Image (cartoon, rainbow, N blue to C red; front, side, top):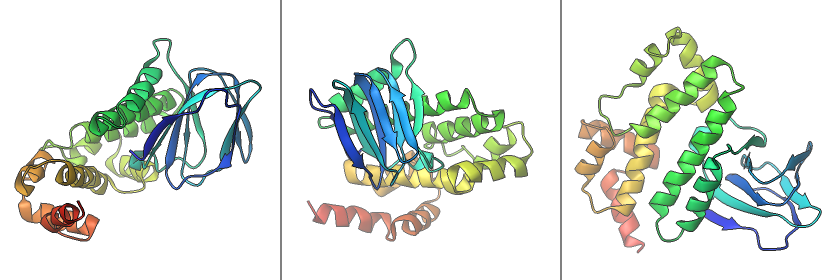
Length: 243
């Protein structure tokens, strides 16, 4: 997570700006508009927006508004090219996740990141209420990969075949959404988590490989080096040398 913050009291305007990362915005208080290069989107408490990287946006209200703003690189939202808008449920699930991520941003980043991932899944599920069934299926497959990446028996091909769609068709649609083939995406999720564990735990490289679904250490090392440009051990040593 790059940051999690809430707008100061009595703010009624945030100027047009962009980020090189995704920004999740949850409206706590106030009514106004999210201003984009294509027009204005009205907001009220409970609105949830996701701004993709490098997409200009601003907020404006007549009196004031309070918004939780979370910055993060979201690999599973690379298909978004414009502001995505949805709304909280009557049970306040999105509000709870956004507030919890904000609360734990400094004292427990791992837990805060878990809340952010859950918030993104919430947004994706809301999106699929209006999407065709094939896209709903793909988001569900992505969610399974992110939840079960540590299972060495989880195979992208099995998920494709279990989707109920022709394998070539679901693979092409998965590529359209995730911007990479299913096998590569699953490996990406596993390696990203392995990198995080190398930096945040005292586990050995072998233990981390197993926890991230790799039974073959040679394949793990090769895949890791392809992603990070160095071996897992060098990656861990380089991070330790910077402390």
